[in-house]
Image (tube, rainbow, N blue to C red; front, top):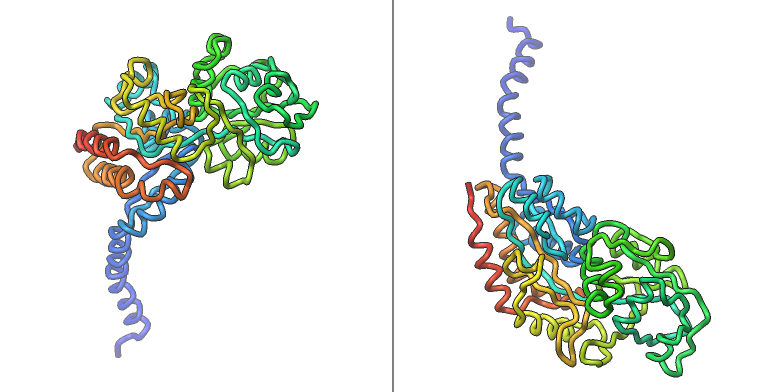
Length: 357
């Protein structure tokens, strides 16, 4: 008589290859996953893009929001499939990337305003200029009722309260945009601090916080503070933001129309200074000409090696082509400005130069 125990074991052993086959099939059909990270400026819309692209194409985009410096260093070291930065790679960074894997293309993916947020319950509509902002961050202006601020806000009940400026603690493209603007408006700031992702602030008095969300959260909670964040973070947190006097002497707020005006003006200017001169489709949008221009505007760039592996590289490029075209429909609702049509076309052409090996 056949041993029933032996027969049961045999059946289980025979079933193993079939079970293993099921496991392999599941793995093979798993969603492609793209690792990305960097600028916090772009994070709100990147999360939206990731969700929408997952629904449309079943591709996972894992984006880590840790600052532009993180995006640059980790795409260079190949820890990310693509990185994002609001400041294009400078000469030193560009050389390091070339040594690591060849040319890196910079794709503009979104454009937005850097809002000057403040916590001053006594003043609902604060006006500031680039010159005054620079002196606040240089610690030359330390009180809210300083004469330079009072001159811009006649009749306002400015309190005799200390100003606490808040800045980004990590390497940040938003800091680069902000300090580039201040350097254009204030010669003293240009010589003492200059445009930088990691500016050297005065030794005392400027408080550092991580990320756009860190700066926004601190300003929201602490009276007397002032900071700079991408507009979406100001609106999400319900923080007051200043009206700025632009290059033409006009008071402007950070809205989509002011951002678009800055982009249109800047794209007419030859980009002959580093880092913008090192890469096609990178632009300085700060302190542009025009009555309606908002003066602190920047782009976020997706940085990707021009030579890509065949499998994952095509997935990365397809996603970025979608971002600069169909993905722009989500910009206005998230307080960004859509890329101009001409810039979308040029971005797709630049992505077309990526090769797969």
